[in-house]
Amino acid sequence: MDPLLSEFDSFVRTRTPALLRSAYLLTGDQHLAEDLVQSALARTHRSWNRLHHSGNAEAYTRKTMYHLQVSWWRRRRVPESMPGDLPEPRGGGSAPDHAHQTSLRLTLRAALAKLSPKQRAVLVLRFFEDRTEAEAADLLGVTVGTVKSQTAKSLARLRAVAPELAELYVLEGSTR
View 1: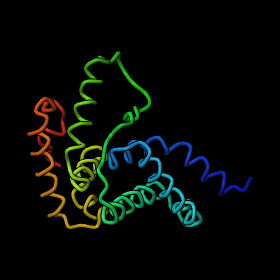
View 2: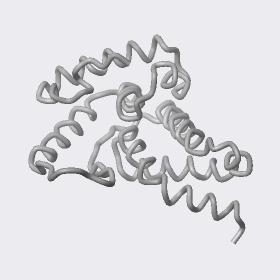
View 3: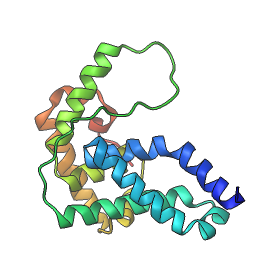
């Protein structure tokens, strides 16, 4: 097998679960998330010759995902639903309280569904991906001021529609 193809294959196998989690949070739908990741990986593959040396393949793929998602928002206005299951991160620690986690996950899913796609993307970038305001603005192709205002509006909306999520760090007022 070609060494470059082998490196790309390894990248896809190791990073796809994390990319799918981010894509799911951006799209709110497992199937749309899979499409988004697949499209971004196809573009990453086309640029692999220059990306594998620089070590920026994941950053390039994520930025491509965010740009594709913004393009999809602008092209179509389809009612959204979140019928799929949120992918679980690998690993773990002590025995979790599954009932509480499930309840929290369902509440979060329902609350995120009430946000606009742009608001959801800003929250995913800022709090799930732990991006700075400047990084989120760059990835979404908007100004830092837009990220700040959308973050504030999104958090206020989440507080209003799901006050039971107040225990989450996202709702406690991050200082990033």
